[in-house]
Amino acid sequence: MSSIEQLNETIPNFAKDVRLNLASLLADDTLSPQRQYGLLLASAIATRNAALITAIEAAATAVMTPAAIAAAKSAASVMAMNNVYYRFVHLVSNPEYKTMPPRLRMNVIGNPGVDKSDFELWSLAVSAINGCGACVDAHEKTLRAEGVSSGVIQTAVRFAAIVQSVAVAIEAAGPAPSTAMG
Image (cartoon, rainbow, N blue to C red):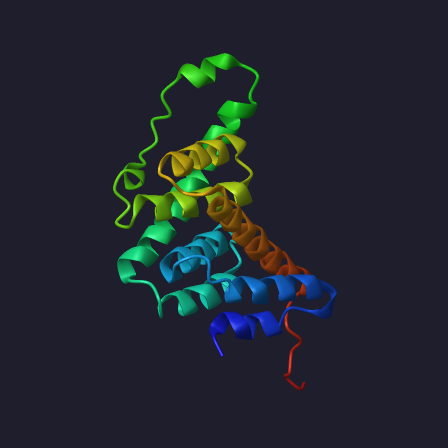
């Protein structure tokens, strides 16, 4: 049993739909293993849930190269920065900010170490979790221009939504009961 399947078994009954969605996600074979596990890992990192990140990274090491794992982590990291900045620029009413250079280093976007469309898909998923509409739109347009179908894009966002719901279910369950006698 994979580390993700083990984690799925710990999701409480109040989140049965979340368990079922995670199980269906794991059975989804429409994406390559690298694309699928990169989505899972980048999305898990975006949730900031340590148990989820640990479980997904353990499973990802079986199907992803170290370079691809690093790229998924890079997507989550650089999108954490970009999503805050570009969400601000998008939401603030003063148009002056749209004309200012961001002065944020993000070279990894141009040379992620994996297929550009994989990195863009992972970035889209993280941007969806972080709620940056400007980034979601930009990544979706880039992916479509690279020939990625709307079905694959929708699947990526579905993966992000499910991973986010797993993190919330784990958090809502609270800490595991102590087995120490005292």
